Length: 73
Image (tube, rainbow, N blue to C red):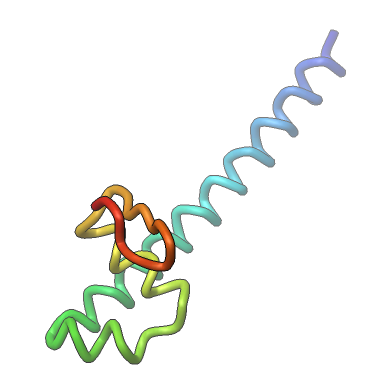
């Protein structure tokens, strides 16, 4: 029985560690985005793809492309 508790505790600790890492990544991305928002157009054009995706998601829920053109925002 105590083995089951130890196993569950270890699994819970691994999950907490994973969530802490994701939280730190999210905070890092948000901090980088906020530091770049003084000139949003310039920021977007110079940003790497992962930051562009985050910038777009701040303003739009979904963008649908049809025949290489924006179909729906």
